[in-house]
Figure (cartoon, one colour):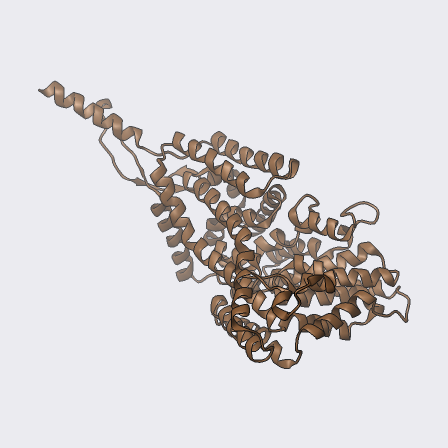
Length: 533
């Protein structure tokens, strides 16, 4: 009988040991990172495959690697569900942004701003005005690509007609487009970065002013000096005149159509919250469209859902309008954000698995040890890591998600506010994408304007905004300016929140074999920074 119970005890002990999760080794974690970079490099960069299935394939591989570390699927699933608590906000925000853009087009806000820019532009300072107009337009619309493809393309044609340098023109357009994209409260990256870091959108925007505003002033001075060499007496080209004429015929213009833009601006100043501000602005845009533009309510709601169409304005034949005008008017809608949301979901699944199993923490443990307690090293390492992942992924979305998971705890340990981390993410993740020719943004700008990124006639050497923001981030780290500190209470709260997330993602039970004469010690062990504490 004693032998039977002893055998049963050994069997139970063996079963418990099989359930024990362990931290991955450094070799396993490094292999996971190499697999991720390799899949992205070969699939996305080499063969031009979509990034989403590549991220899901990597997640599939990491699930089996986590199994080797003692994880079960139910535990990984719980870790993913826990991570998706924050993703829900991002997805809702992105859908709301799409609806807001479509409503602001329908009521005339965005078309009127473009119309005004073309009216007040000084053709003799085409570089400076290209930069300023793209800054304003991207700030209002929250998208750099649409800005470059609409008003940017019009300014490019205008500049070429005046004998401007194509590389300087593209640099001015790109610099302005990413400036507004970075600071706009309705930009996807501006929404994603603070949610990954653990701060609010408006706190994030305020923090970004410390790097973005000075570099924008430098850019404006640079493009103004470059414009001094332009010949005088130039006139606005036909493409800009055509767009202005067509927009004024499609919409009823007046100060009232600026109400949604003013509400978004007020929401930023008064800190209403990003979602309430966008909801208020969207409702205002719907009312302006219905009562001022005399739009049908069904058409307005359809536009907010599926995107704006010129047919809603009575233009059944879109071919009568110029392509530039169509690219301004026909966009937006909640469904237009589906692709972005899919990428966010895939990225968060990947980050949840790699973080819960400890692959990220262990692979970057040497870097984290190098940064420990050193602010300048931490900021510099964050910038470098974000650039490498962004370059491999070809997009800033996975970079924001993965890098925040790697460095978040060290920022909190040093007492740095989450808005410092979120700002640092965008100083590279948003600002330097045009510098990478194979990235989605770099390839888009090259294809759109037909101007190379590097070499003779390349635009990147003149795109000062892209280069200066990471440099400004390092200068702030060295000087301590803009390095916002948390109170001791907030620091403890943020660290406790990370610990709670780690506990929710899964706990490791350690069992010491009784047959070896050791005392049984069962306890909760957290996976923190890749080591078992």
